[in-house]
Image 1 (cartoon, helix red, strand yellow):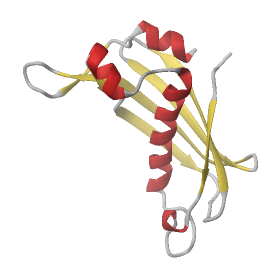
Image 2 (cartoon, one colour):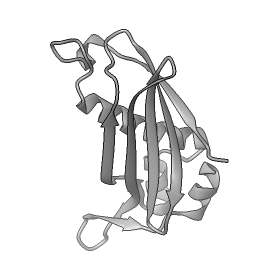
Image 3 (cartoon, helix red, strand yellow):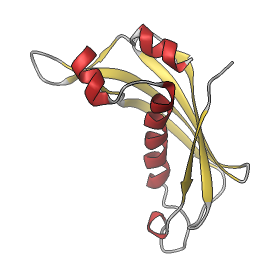
Image 4 (spheres, helix red, strand yellow):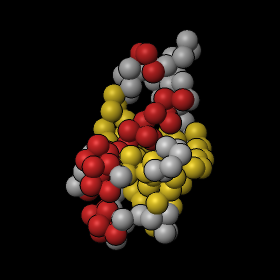
Amino acid sequence: MLRVEVLKLQVHFGDCDPVGIVHYPNFFRWYDASSRYFFDRCGVPPWRELEKQHGIIGTPIVEVNSRFVSPASYGDQIEIHTSIVKWKDKIFVQTHEIRRDGILLAAAEEKRVFACRDAETGRMRAVLVPEEIVALCR
């Protein structure tokens, strides 16, 4: 059974363009917020704690694809349904569906990695997905 967590939000006037529909970058902002919300609901510690424990600083996106189906406007109550559909050694695939009253507004698939800072260069690098995090998220 696939675990799905649902983040509920209200669309605000500032989320919209002059025509009154949600400006598309906000969907990506909501996908990102829902990604962290998913981990919170699964009991994964905040990134600052994981950095102390495992050196993990977050889960940057390495690839994203979004499909926009129907517009949203300010005042709309939306739900973002998020799940992880695939785990690999260093990559996991997370999906998001944004709905209003059951109607699909947008859907995305993200490929993400768990990242830490390289000790020599200070740059981010992908690390193996910790098994304890996989266990929490199933």
